[in-house]
Image 1 (cartoon, one colour):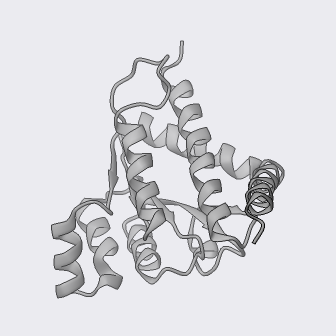
Image 2: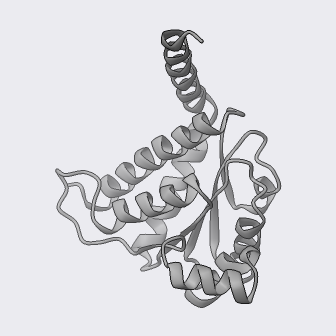
Length: 194
């Protein structure tokens, strides 16, 4: 295996994916900014769910909202809860009501009308994320999907689906965090920049 070629090919593919995001996802990214700005102005919160690397992204994104992203902006915390971080909740739910229901149960307990659920799934077909989205819709929450490939089943369930134009899980995950940083920085600037 030519490791240098692998590295070069990976970086080129990552760059090409980001350029495709610019071309194909611009309007959806802008819509997500508007949706979140309105939610925060209205005193609403964001809940986040996903599995594996997407669970880590949930924690990362929630932290950026609660603490801050842009160091040149002094702002209060924005209410965000990663539903992926409470091990007692996740393990009790997995044991007692099935892992497919753990996020939906937390959405049931924490979500309110016009709150936002950010549902992250590289395939768009994660059963526990789908059930969380269905629960959020039943509570009249707004749903943003961070998806990949063809968007899977979640594409049509979300109010707004940002679908990274790739079938490579690594590139999709890189796209998700890149898009998240762009959205969050714009949200901060719209809400708090002078």
